[in-house]
Image (cartoon, rainbow, N blue to C red; front, side, top):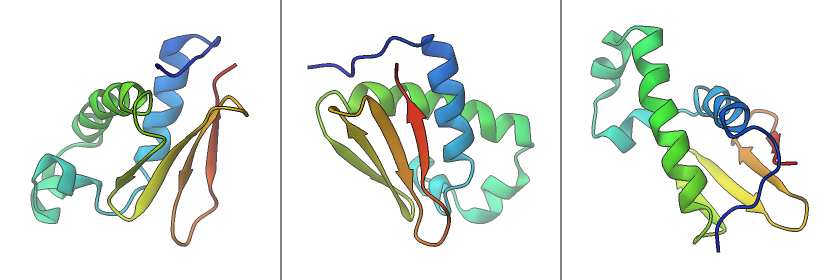
Length: 97
């Protein structure tokens, strides 16, 4: 079953991308070293994470949570939200409706 949403898809993915920008260790998903990731321009990092946001959105339709770097991305079916939980930062909540 896919993630149900009623907001504009691009708005959801942009908000999720913003949340992913704050994840420590997200570069590991791309099999990059921290140094390589740091050499990318902000726009290039954002483009990588935008693509990953698409993948995560659809992945959450089959898995209720996905670990990324030091954080946890969770689809809350009943609340129609996706949360990005960081170990030391405030959890970000993305509304789907």
